[in-house]
Length: 311
Image (tube, rainbow, N blue to C red):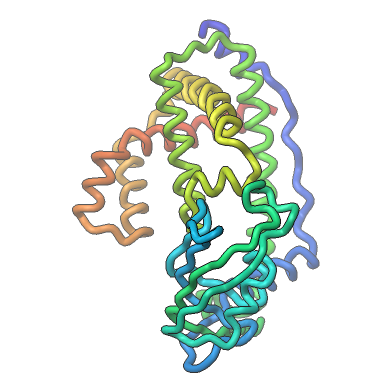
């Protein structure tokens, strides 16, 4: 990596400047905020359009379960058109505790060819019916968010929009800069480093889609890729990720950007407080993820260093 330091001190891509948040952007974000702070409460009686039903479901094609067709305790808003046409309508009028067979057909243009145009049955169980209650944009809503007034909320929202815009510009700039440095350098990575990068990437995808009640296989199917195509994309991303990690570590060591014990402990404390972890859970996190945390903190320091030293 003898030419690496020169590479990262001589790149001048030009960092962009943000366009300050407009009133229209602020208003739009405030509406999104209101939508995400809708209160819901359990209701008695039948589900109607606009209600949320918490369901288990499993799809069957010709009496056989199919991949990606199963979910448990899924909150489905009736009328949201989240599921395939005809599904949500058949849950209107159902009550908590009821079971129902939902008969639907997948669209002919559905991405999974073995399901496209096919008639299927979803066995569903309704656990709970919930009704939404919307809040209004006023001082009471601002106080609910820990602020003093709606004017302060608007100011905070404007600052947040500008902050996100700057982050987006910085990330785009860093991605291009690091790609240039990696391309111009003589970085070599071992098969073990590539495999570690691949596992980290796969874990990221697996955990991300799990938040939506999906398996990785179901996600691959949903984006219209074959397993072979996805694996090839992962291999390419793993190599780039391994080289980027090597680059980050090189710069961190050369510029003394290694996090201190105090910074590591603060990060662990922040994670403990955010996720409300017990002492046992914190100790398990330290055993399994301390090195990953140090790597992430170093990467953040390197990112800030590159932003400050490349114009």
